[in-house]
Every structure is written in C-alpha cells, then in structure tokens.
Image 1 (cartoon, helix red, strand yellow):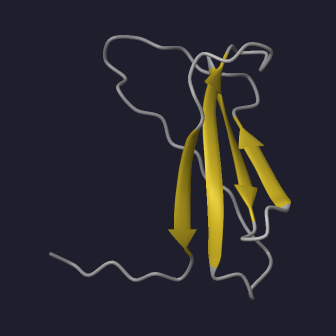
Image 2 (cartoon, rainbow, N blue to C red; image 1 turned 135 degrees about the vertical axis):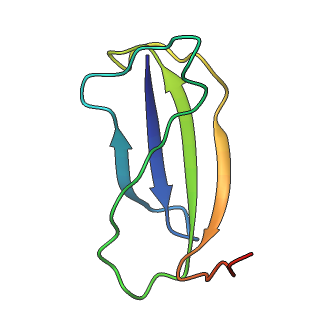
Amino acid sequence: MNAIMRVYTPDGTLIRTSSFPNGFVINSTSGQSQLATTLTNNTLKNVKANVIFTDAEKNANFSNSLSVDLNLGQKIPSP
C-alpha cells in the first residue's frame, strides 16, 4: 500500500507532494501511518493537505481523498 499527500496554498497551487518511496505493508498491528514534508516558503501561514491511500505503485486509489486545512506555526499547548 502507499499514501500520497499533496500540499496546496490557499489559492490552490500545488507546492509539495510526499509519499512512501516503496510503499508500506499493512498488518493487524499497524493502525496508523504518518506523512510529513518540509515547506521552504516561510511566508505561508495556511495550507491545505490532501491525502489518499493507493496501491504500492500509486496507480490505483484505495480510499477517498481526505482534505485538511492546516495553520502553520500553530502552537499546541501542553496538557
């Protein structure tokens, strides 16, 4: 399996795509997957990330797209 994350500016411009180089194996003990990327534009404050799960070769979609609005530089307080 694989996952692709596409990051967009507020005006819809694609600025970054991330995925697993060789995909990953799904088993009963792994219930999550983490995607990360680096953005070099320090002026961006808000972006949208779209994530979709695919086959390992990224040819067939296995899920609907999940869209998340992100506020960059947001501080999450400690509990």
